[in-house]
Amino acid sequence: MWHVLIVLVCLVVADGRLSLAHGSGNRSPAPQSASNEAMRLVVSDATAPTVRVIDLSSGRVLESFNLKGPARLHSGASGRYVYAAQPDAGQVAIIDTGIATESHGDHDDIKITPPRLLRTRLDGPRPSHVNHDNTRIAIFFDGDGSAHVIPEKDLVSGKLESRRRIETGAKHHGVAQPVGRLVAVTVPPDGEGLPNAIELRGPDGSALQRMNCSRLHGEGKTGVFLAFGCADGVVVYQIGRDGVTARSVSYPASLPTGRMIRNMSGAAGFRFLVGDFGADGMVILDPSAADGDFRFTSLPSRRMHFHLHPEPGDQLFVILEDGKLFRINPITGQVTGQAQVTNRYSMEQGVVRPRVASVGRHVAVSSPATGEVIVLDADSLAERRRIQLGGAPFDMLAVGGTGASH
Image (tube, rainbow, N blue to C red; front, top):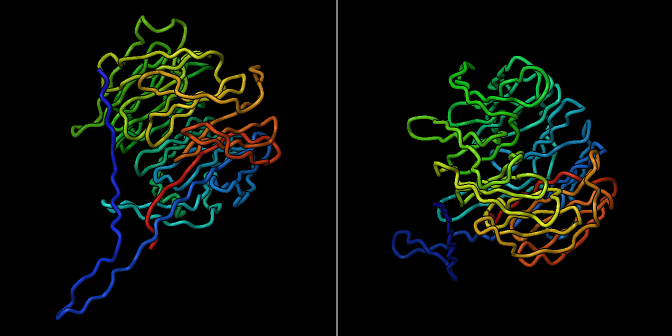
């Protein structure tokens, strides 16, 4: 049975002034706060060492940063920072998006500043996956099989003394993910190929538990659950009061055979994960269910990329090889909208294809072949604007927030 946790936030704004009494009837007005919104898109280039930050409301390029190499983009613990992993250059750069939000219970505060490239860098052979929990960042370096784990507040401040280095023993395409007070990290395979197991490491780096996971690739988290995609199912970790528990969940016989999850994503507000399942399929699973409660959705053609809206979680965007963007309700599996966004792209290996990102009312699609980013309304899928960047815009992350500015 599906368990859906929907978080409803109500913001009540009272018209008028709030007064405080001081002594015998003296009154002074409380400071007024203006409500502001900022939505920005971070875009990397497939072949050039360039990252741009775009204002989604206007389409204006706010800043362009030169890196050492082409980058893949990853979100951080606070949502403010974007991590640009440059495998060929052996470096991870950090971009401050300039959007900082802070919750005060009954309201959020927002601070908006110009985006900037931080001085802090992390160097290492072929950085790949960058993951996080609420406070820590975990960066995996494929070139030597090491994972670097550090509190984000220390990393962005350049205080690298608190960094932990976890050794796996051999180079491989792996991943590390903070799990409670522990860290889940892949075990190198015998020879070439993908990992076949994952370990929980303690604060001292010692291995506490090992779970088999053939051809491990892809991870996703939602609430207290973390899952990894395997050839025959998923490994699910659950963070509880008594620590971290782990279990393996097999793919059910009802799913198409010969497929596996290779990429996964979760969202705030719902307790489910969505993953790819073959070239033309998606799967939704409930990590709290003993059997995973897997649900399969067939696509009309091959998928180029998918993206789950990070806030409501009830909008799954999938861009297909013919350039059509589909919006799917992941709870029901029903298509709720579609739009022709780009031209058809080849699915041959080595072709750079579009990617999707969303935040608030915006959904963006990169088009490497035409050097542009297309911004649409997330609800109607009506096109808002086309932003000409040149080059081959590829990977994207959308960040944003709404709050009071004092």
